[in-house]
Image (cartoon, rainbow, N blue to C red):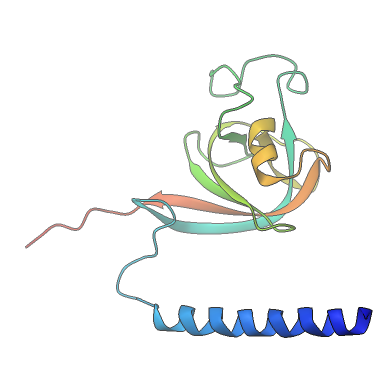
Length: 148
């Protein structure tokens, strides 16, 4: 029974991957940059570990940008990216992703590349684990094309 179930699951997986591959190949358009969110494209990619923080772990409400820390906001801390930069953070364990805005500095623990608010960590599905492998895609505005 267990072997039959595993075989069936494997067959379904192979068939679904095959259908995805054929759909993706037909829709490649290299003439324009791929938009991640309307008006933005990926400028750079970084992988590493993410953690989350809140008012208590941040020791107060202030962020490096001077904003009040909102635990439910889609914001994050990064060591070097300019304040206001938008990034898409993808949890590599489950594929969940969220676009956040950099408004703080950190993380200050070796091996971590980004700290997200606890609200974002809930959406990404890693509050209980605390630390997960992530892909961070730095987003930049797509320049408006002028009509000649």
